[in-house]
Length: 359
Image 1 (spheres, helix red, strand yellow):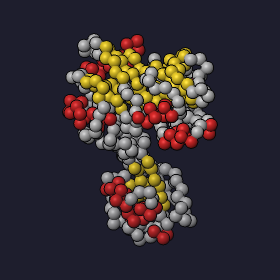
Image 2 (cartoon, one colour):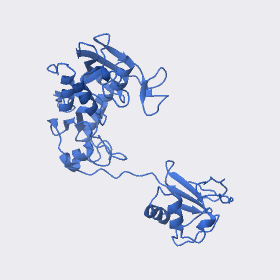
Image 3 (cartoon, rainbow, N blue to C red):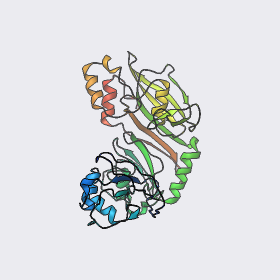
């Protein structure tokens, strides 16, 4: 990374911190393109103060100890040159540029977390993931994930299979989607299952139970449409006319309310795109109940107080990966598992007067 600095007149107050033009001072910093950069020009009131004190005041979002650590590691430029002395006395007009490297997630560690195991042998296991559990560690979720639990359950043999941060993971479920997931215990099984899930859809059965607003016009059908990032909101996925990846969902209405305000739907995946069922059902006009991203709540006013109470306490999309079936890559046997519905989803289904015996 190159920091090139030219002297400017100090700003009139501490809150005005203009970026200055860059000239020819080159410094080698290996923090990558995602590093954050902060800039500051010392004020007359900073004259004679210690370097770390001035910068801690200039950048209050950074702790003094964090700034000190970054300075010691050579991430601070003073008037175009590196500086590492905390005792440096600041001069009015000094120009500082601090580079903050992106956080690097530590390798996941084993944690003793209870797992609901639906099937297990020497090569793989199928677990019933609870809603609220993140599959693999990421920024803000470094512990308590499925990967942390799997490392404790399977031991060192799992480490590194499919990547250090995602050992054994073949496919994933959203944090707030519960249900069946298969995990590989060795490289050969991981490669075979990854190929199966990406190329051999005929030998995979993935059925989900969803509670949706309204009732689809046709009791069963196919939703087909490429899925990609929404051009209106990059945090959401959407069905796109141009671009995206092909996606196909087969659905079947299992039960519906007499007033047609809600229905219980089975969705079977022919592809595995991000948020596929949630996006496709929304595209059909029947978003998942309580979906915080794609859902809607304008119909809740027509329910009684008991339904209101349950809906208000159900803080995730009403979706559960009920059935998972696949050919075992080693034995050739067909493994078929069914994950029991979680209690809160059962309560929601019962409260909405949708029969649950069929699931």
